[in-house]
Image (cartoon, rainbow, N blue to C red):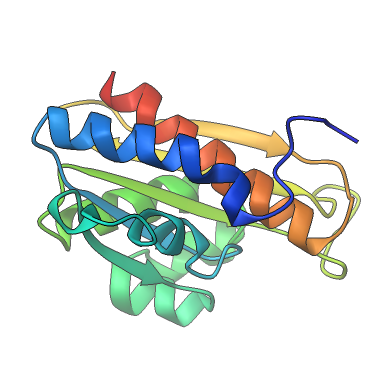
Length: 169
């Protein structure tokens, strides 16, 4: 087991505070677009008092229809690339950015298990994208060890928070 892997959202408090402080210092707001984490990233951010000055909104877009309706991800893109793909993660982040008042948006889409994995996209496959105004969208492709649904979701939150921090630094 990865000793640095979070075991609960409480394990991510220091990182979350760092992200919020960095956003506040730069006068930026964040939006989240979440599939496999089901709102955990936004939940971690808003757990911290004073987060309202840095968190604009969170989109939980678990279904493909929600990705299309709320974020504007083309249904054809989901059909062609698959919901768990770089292309969809990028479209989710960019959609959240344009449908919010945020300066930065993070998206996650993946397979947290225990079902749903394939040989091509096994359980633990996650795509994260961060879109910032006037910057190219960044993408991270993760393969987390299949140590269970909770572990994959928490590692996704940790990586997404770190990706926000990297994008605004």
